[in-house]
Image (cartoon, rainbow, N blue to C red):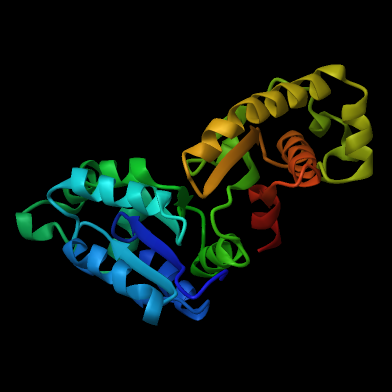
Length: 292
């Protein structure tokens, strides 16, 4: 921290069963003072006193303690983003409806909205509606549908460790559309129309990070042109995005399997923006899944 009066604040939100408790435990291991289910009305007072006692603070906001007046929370959080003493990040964690149903069935837990005499499916749908305004405020979204507890812990650790205050982090990720669209992305680009190394037998089982696959793409100018177009779009809009005081911008590149085209493009963009001095991270979803 740059001075004794500054604070790192992370707010965790998301639907029940998505992994919020795991995220808080990881943040606790990273040295954060963590509070689960704090009534939001006490959050301003907590933030005001935190610099003296809790320079790294994490709080969860979910359906149990969501305020009735969301406008006041939005105004409060915007003030936090504009306060140079506070480095704040709101992370919204979510998963597919079917995954949430399965998790509740396996653990036999009661959904927080079950007291309203709703079925589990109805409670999950209602919770989505009730948390939509908080989701829209999020700096970063994490979809845990295909993540194990260990995977989520690693992702939280990677995202939060060593992040300087007041800086935008560009997260580039590749994914396969066959596994579902990347729900945690701010930008999604489709690379399925580009030439596919999969149809070259000798390239089928090696990824877009390897020299032979890179050589394959070098033969097709449309690949470089598409990368340049994405690159230009991001560069043109980053000044305005940075002015919004958000913490993360996730750029997802998808192809059919998430193994060749998306990996190659995401890696190139990651390397370009790293060379320009931006804070960057890279995630190759399909490759990481294959290692687990």
